[in-house]
Structure formats: structure tokens, C-alpha cells
Image (cartoon, rainbow, N blue to C red; front, side):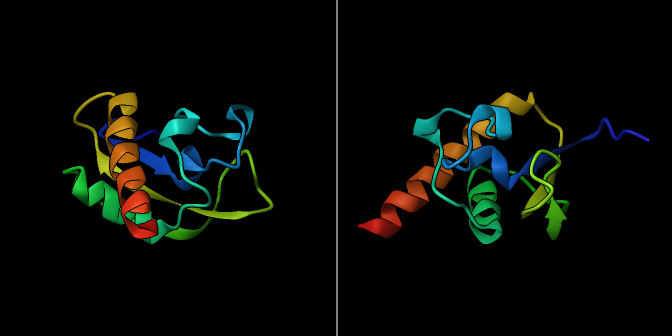
Length: 99
């Protein structure tokens, strides 16, 4: 049964190596190369969201041959808005680490 109260955010939404047809959901300027679940969880918390559940042993449906991961968040606004807020924090963390 579909859960309308939560949003699933996959790692592949923010992977700069993927094309949009393979599952990337945000623009290339808002993505990072090969994000980890830990980075996604930290960026999600920095963006002000509460993580209900996470799993790193699952496979993204468009790439069933590669292990990925996801976090589940309570739905407070549109998924696009949530993804944009998380991607800002993810990119900011990555650029801060590289300096």
C-alpha cells in the first residue's frame, strides 16, 4: 500500500555520473559525484528534515545491478522542494570538504 505521508529520497537522485533517464532528479550543478548514504543523511539533517528510516542495502529500480540507498522523510512540502534543499546542503558539504 502506498504511503502518502512520507517521501523516499534515493542517493541516485544526486549522482552526477547518472543521466536523468537513469534516475537523477536534480540538475548537474546541484549534484555530486558518487554520494554516500552518510553524506545524504548529514545533508538531510542540515536542511532541517527528520529522517524516519534509511537503508543502504537496497537497489534503485532503474539500476538494479548497483546497490544504492535511501532515506524516508515525512512529507511537509513538495518532493522537488525537498530535493533542492538537500542538494544545496550536499553540494556545500562537498565543496567544504575539498577545500
